[in-house]
Image (tube, rainbow, N blue to C red; front, side, top):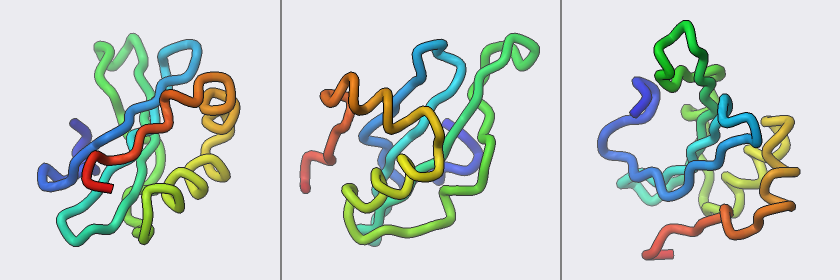
Length: 94
């Protein structure tokens, strides 16, 4: 888990690009807000996921709004979700 994702937050979707070197986590917080963060994975980092931006600071009222913001910010994400809509997960309590 990234240093930018607090342990109290629940990641309910993790979407990777086709090369498996980029990932977006969509999460919920205890205050019922939602957010997302983008990560990269490079060989020189030993395959660890490293945050690339500071998206996790933004708060959204719904998972759908977090997805919409992520798809606008992360260039490859919208296409991956279009091709594989089952990757668009919603938290169980939603």
